[in-house]
Amino acid sequence: MQASPARVLVVDDFAPWQIFVERYLGTSPNVRVIGFAADGLEAVQKAEELLPDLILLDVGLPKANGIEAARQIRTRAPESAILFLSDSSDPDVVTEALSAGGRGYVLKVAATKDLIAGTEAVLNGESFLSRGLVGNDKAQP
Image 1 (cartoon, one colour):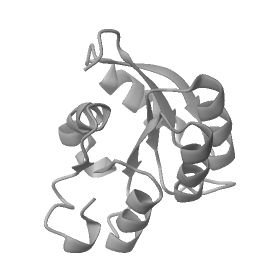
Image 2 (cartoon, rainbow, N blue to C red):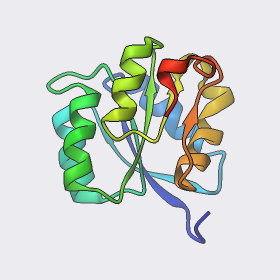
Image 3 (cartoon, rainbow, N blue to C red):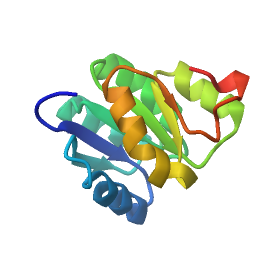
Image 4 (cartoon, rainbow, N blue to C red):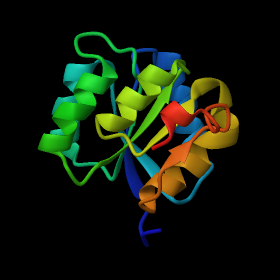
């Protein structure tokens, strides 16, 4: 882990979820939320502007979904790691999200168990899947 806290951009269209993620990550001294975006297009713009170390990205976003946003972010902010944080456990969605540039995938229902571990793994260059997804051969990174 780096000496200063990792800079995190939270992308989700549900404001109460953004607040939960910011507060929950606030319990870790290794990360600091530096911005929010509520749709895929805004995510790409903020990623390019802020160049965060990590982007927590939902799949189901307005304007451009998280998978399309991830593809654009990979070209505009290639140093930013992407960790998907989503409700969808569909193996095809998970596979597509990882193929689009995500290093990991955390299910929202498992956020209190997996979010900090997933964040730290991805920031250390490792892949991460919520336990509910592990064992699903199609969704392996």
